[in-house]
Amino acid sequence: MNSDQQLTPDAQAAERFRNLLEIAPDPILEVDAAGRIVLANNEAEKLFGWTRAELAGQPIEMLLPLRFRTNHTAHRAHYSANPKTRPMGTGLDLFALRKDGTECAIDINLSPVSVADGEGRVMCIIRDVSERKRTEEQIRTLNQNLERRTEELAAANQQLELRNVEVERASLLKSEFLASVSHELRTPLHAIIGFSELLAEESAGGLNTKQKRFTSHIHQGAHHLLELINDILDLSKIEAGQLELRQETFALDAAITEVLSSIRPLANNKGIELSDEIQPDLSIFADRIRFKEIIFNLFSNAVKFTREGGRIAVRCAPLPDHIRISVADTGIGIAKDAHESIFQTFRQVASTTKGVREGTGLGLAITKNLVEQHGGQIWVESELEAGSEFFFTIPRTGSGGEEQPSLMPAVVLVVEDDESSRELVVSYLESEGFKPLTAGSGDEGLRVARDSKPDVILLDLLMPGKSGWETLYKLRSTPATAGIPVIITSVMDEKKMGFALGAADYLVKPVAKETLLEAVRKVKRLGLP
Ligand code: ADP
Image (cartoon, rainbow, N blue to C red):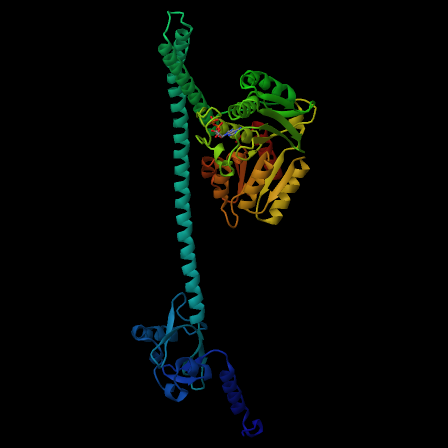
């Protein structure tokens, strides 16, 4: 209705100012020198719930919660003395009171406004910040939760560290205890065995039939005890990682022939036919004595569990990196549900062919540990009454001799979730002639380590899913991977924890190329677990 042409320029400006006020996105109030509301815009009405008519002439304090009102007059007086454009109550939480009695969080900007009669008024531009405050509160709560979780994790890590130190101590004590006890036991046992043999030979006088039988019982019992002690000691040494392998390249058929010649008398006693189907010219990379122990254990079981007149064969099959060797018999066989458990300590599922439990129940547990320490695997295929075939794999070399293994490129498994970091490490390793394998998570790392038996593992600590600590713990406690040195790479510096959990080295990221390669070379050279 009112057109600009009908208004004076001053009136036009005032009209435009009012329009601007109305379309402003924030609530705006104007307050006079006495603290009374002179003007309120549309948004102010919406925020406070009062109409502008209700607000006009009212003290500004009516829009403040009661608890702020008393001090507000002093604040106003202070502002009148220093009028300038600035936020109100910087760093404080400000609240407005609505008509319905509810409060809302606000920010306020103050600007002095001069009017014609020189009266100092104040323009208050208000912003409803309740949404922002809510978000800030949520972030604060999340941060507090995160801090709590981090503290809990640190406490759990510390517990784990302590537990591992305890476990290591206990394992050391166990080994020491076993070593000294078995020494103490073996000395008198040798005396019992020796004297019972002398008695049986009747060199110190004749024995009647009953006495001979008793002497034989003493001899057999003492022998069994000695075997048991030796096996327990062996196993505890292997489990404590104290068994050092002296690996070398040697001819497979010669080593097998040596074992066969010592087992042949036993087989002949039972009329069992032994056949050697090992192809010549194959060599393996192993600890010769321990390899013969593996073969001997399998042969002696085969003889023990095969009836008179049966057959035992030793065979082999060359694979790309390993040689698979098997000992097959036509014996009493093993039920499917015992195929795994027989490799555990003290598991005996069958009597021997003479119906008596012989042996200690430790032979296969020792054999499995030895095979795995060589980086191989062992398993059985068998059915009850249909014979058994025990298979194991052992690393092979070419025909080049002793130096061959060190010339072969070391396989390094990089367990890292971040693709670009993984690529970088892989390129470092390749440039130095290492053969890298990769895994993007802890679980994948465990699987690859178990299947591919790398020479060294580089393990990043911060990965989704399984934590790096957990992966390290699993790697060290799984026999198939326990011997593989693990180098931790992490942005966190927690070397103490890393070494307590059995890491061979600990590198804090970012890691320089040369530092990384030197660490890999070092653990590879020392064969550190
Ligand atoms: P043991 O001293 O009893 O032979 P092992 O650990 O060598 O202990 O073997 C564990 C069990 O596995 C044996 O007691 C037997 O039940 C079973 N076993 C091992 N080898 C054979 C085999 N060749 N044929 C049948 N059963 C076997």
